[in-house]
Length: 372
Image 1 (cartoon, rainbow, N blue to C red):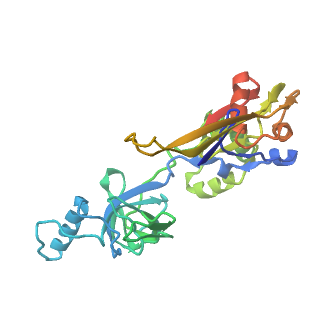
Image 2: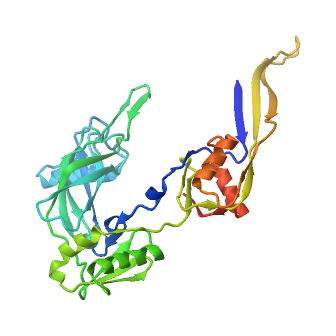
Image 3: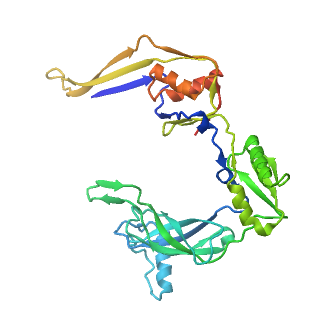
């Protein structure tokens, strides 16, 4: 049996993405609509509990007491008397139902809901969600959901223990399955003022948004209160819809913080357009360790009362690449310069995360390093 382990310097597995953009693309303006949210108009989160029925033996077991109790309560309300001891509910599963609803949803409109298994069911495939009241803050019911559950996959398990699965079958959706019963209360205008909240708070971006609005509507209409908030004074609150529509279409050059974002779990590195590097040199080298294990039969001497055993024999080989290259970045290096340097070094994707971390420690990376 042979094991091969390749140890790169600072080895971490990932995918590296660098986008080379032209100067005009880098300075492209962005609509205010894509940069801010209006305070008071956030989506409402609803939640509820119910049962999914019609499963092909993939529902909760008797150990899921909540499912047994829920089925007993439901059938009792329908006039059926059931024994007190637990009964088989393998065609039924307890689920939590959630929905994300716009504050402008009106009674009678339909929204999608997500259905997630709460017990020990193995699949929700083919099931039907029973009527579920969906409540918001204060335990006020705003909608009811019901309908067939779509999981977009399958899960098959044989008697011998073999299992074949495509996608995840313990979470599904009911498209348009919830009907809004009560209108949401919201208010985004107070004292003839409205607030716009930046999705990425930034002093420069907030100032530019306020300036763009003032240039369009007149001086003093907008004021950047802090990096994450721009306040608007409304002369006529009755025309708020047309006013917001006009503001959303305005374009500004939103500023961005220089960032390098690293996700070590998925191995992804994203480099922002503002990232710069100080003059620096980077070297790269590889070390390969090969460990081989071969079985060896140990035979005891005759009449020794010993037993024959298999003993592994292990051999180790270490190989280090010669002539490691050094790449030098001069002046204010950009993302393109960095990509060119990494290509020159011919580094594998497994090394780039560690290179960025080393550049940050050395003080050469003029950007915020974010590790997810």
